[in-house]
Amino acid sequence: MPPVRRAAAVAVLAAAVLAPLVLGCEESQRKDPLVIKAVAGNPQRTNLPMFQVRIVRLLNRVRPDAPLAGVWDLLGAAAVPHEKQALWEANDLRLGRGGEEAIARLNNLLTNTADREAYVYTVAVRENMDFVVTFGSDRPTIDVLWSGSDGSLSGRHFEGAQVQFRVVCRGDPADPQAVALAIVPEVVSGKEMLHWIEGPQGFSQQVSRSIFTLQELAAEARLAPGEVLVVGGRASSPVSLGGAMFYEHRGPDLWVQTVVFQAQRLPAGAGLGQASQPGRPSPSP
Image (cartoon, rainbow, N blue to C red; front, side, top):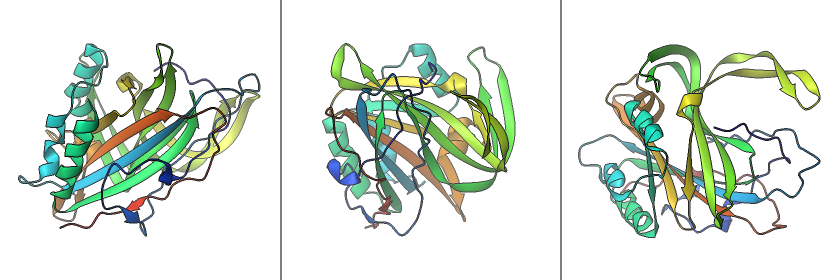
């Protein structure tokens, strides 16, 4: 992923702007917020484009007859380089892209899937500003093994950890209506500690948790208007990246997460609002 340029402060926009992708979402009592990381501004770049990103987190209990499991049959390739797609697949990570027909059929699958939940968030962010999408709450431990592009195998054990994706939006010079979404998986772990952080004015101290970024897995996909980017995983192994990041035990049951991104470029001078509240789990039929 190219280095993130430091730009104007990030803000968030109310969720009511876009029509819902997922049916049946209500107000939430369960707090699982979208975490936004503000980065230092650049006074020379105050006219950066702004994008609206809508994130839908779908969760369902793993069962053979779960219709939502068929979502990947509706999607095409995510237009990332072949080598990157192969690396994601080798690590049980999935990346797909779909249009209006895929969205409509995804809604039907969701409606017909029992034991499922849906959470909806909307943010507004300037070009090349990063924000973070978290997956659930902290877990006592997370163990992962991953394969590098050179075929090497690495592993790591995390205590008190949470998985997330860091996301950056960019414009497409060839198509002003298109949006490029760059994403990279991360693991946040441990307790908050004092760290040295490099900023525009030099180094400063900041209290934060440890963040482990899987930089080699960074990928960028281009979305045309009306398209969605779907991110998920397989569970061929509980310690693969896909198995560890997207699957979680709830008592005796195994639940899987699927994340859907929509993005559009906002008109110049668009107003900014507050963070949207997560949608309540959709009622199961």
